[in-house]
Amino acid sequence: MSDKYPKLPVVEDIEYLKNNGVVIVDKPSGPTSHQVAAWARDIVGTSKAGHAGTLDPKVTGVLPIAFGPSARALHYLHLSSKEYVGVMRLHHKVSRDDVLEIFSQFTGPIFQMPPVRAAVKRQRRVRNIFELELLEMEEEKILFKVSCESGTYIRTLCFDIGEVLGVGGHMVELRRTRVGHLLESDSVTLQMLSDSLYFSKEEGGKTPLMPMESLLLHLPRIILKDNAVDTVCHGAQLNVPGIELIEKDFKSQDVVLLCTKDARAVAAGRARASSETLENLKKGEAATLETVFMEPGTYPK
Image (cartoon, rainbow, N blue to C red; front, side, top):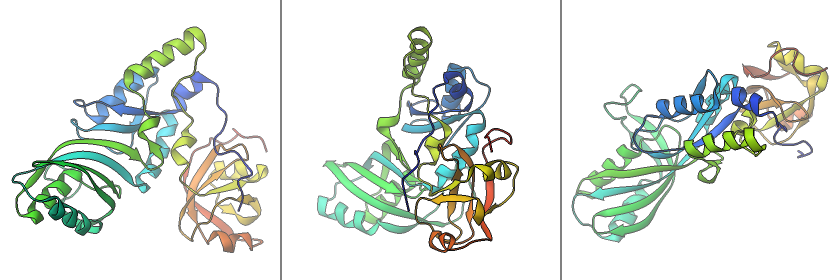
């Protein structure tokens, strides 16, 4: 395994990033995630924008937004965990020790029923809570941090904790602080995005726009040989002879990113064998494509 090649491509063309890039917005309380994505789209002056991980209108925090073709990469963020900081209010006082005990019980796999107004079918499902930390407690108010599997309903989690404590409870405030590898410190407000674009045009300053590959840093990478890139762009499956380098360990059927030597994303797919097995093969199919990012004819052979 090696880190010989760069993790992100060098993209200095602001106009390109406006139509193909990514920005991590600090969503304010009030508007829907869809509305925030639409405002970001209008600020950069492009025609299409998508977002990853819908936040309720009153919830704030990390909202990844992708413009143009980059929106195809948002799907792969759904594989990542998320982190939130929130406030819940219990309906009666309980001891700190009782809360800590219940928090420990809610760490690991839990059952959840999506809320009535959820966008998914209401059926009980399992979600993993990786960490549930009590930060502060004052009277009936609890400040907590939770790291969880994508698709976990924090409002439901607060309600369930209140039920198990026997006093009832509900979520008061919530802020998302991380989506996968994308952190709160990576995010900007819509005003900051607008200002940066203005100053970049007038004075040549930097903007918070990033290349699409910023969304895919959590995926194990297979570096392609130059002569295999365009073949994959046309939708052909990746065969072992087209591999230049395998960078990180992965298992059979894991999602992998196929990219060029200069870190440009070509496609994402499922590995047909583990990284260890592929490194010892001379022929055969290495990955089955799911999503092609690069247009044919883009990369020189």
